[in-house]
Amino acid sequence: MPLKFNETVELHILNGQVVGYRALKDYNRVAFVAMKNLLCTAVASSMESSYISATGGECRYFVLNENYESLADKLSKYHPNLIAIFIDSSKDFEALRATLHSLFSALADRGVDSDYLFHLYTFVKVGLEPLQKDERIRNYLADKRLITYTANFEEGLLELREVILVPEEIYSEIVEEYPISFRHTRIFNQGLKGYVIKFEVE
Image (cartoon, rainbow, N blue to C red):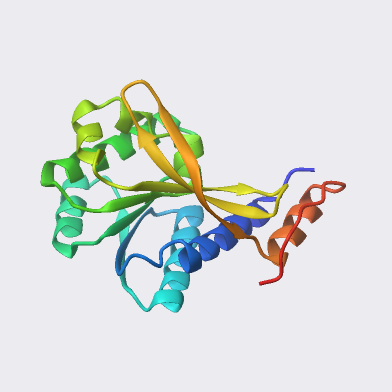
């Protein structure tokens, strides 16, 4: 039986907490950029609060709308060393890809010097092809660290991945792994009866 919507949202919130607490420790100024919908807002907020709790670093939340130029100006003036991108929650993937491309086109125009983290759904469902296929954006990102995360529930792990964009393909490699929480396993095992996943007590 598939997970209910509220269970899916909670799983993503839990993922965000793990990433914010463990994966962002090397950054001291983070911009969270999210579309204005339940999933993106919930995950970005959970990651933001965990990041503050773990590091005491500075961060700011930005709403992603169609005013890409204004948003890029604000991000440029903020000078973050990591920008976390949350684009999802629509079945119109072409529109989401256009949003991703427009945002990064504006960021490239301004030469915003920051690493980037992509929300799991942004990486897996929306995809980074709009960035990879645009040579100007690809060149802009060439010296930036691009990261995302995936969940390996069979092993009870959240995987932090570095993403590499080259003209022919997009690939990623696992650079860190973090144990998921007991709450992760309860939701997942309730939704998919008979499928048991591992967990570690932190």
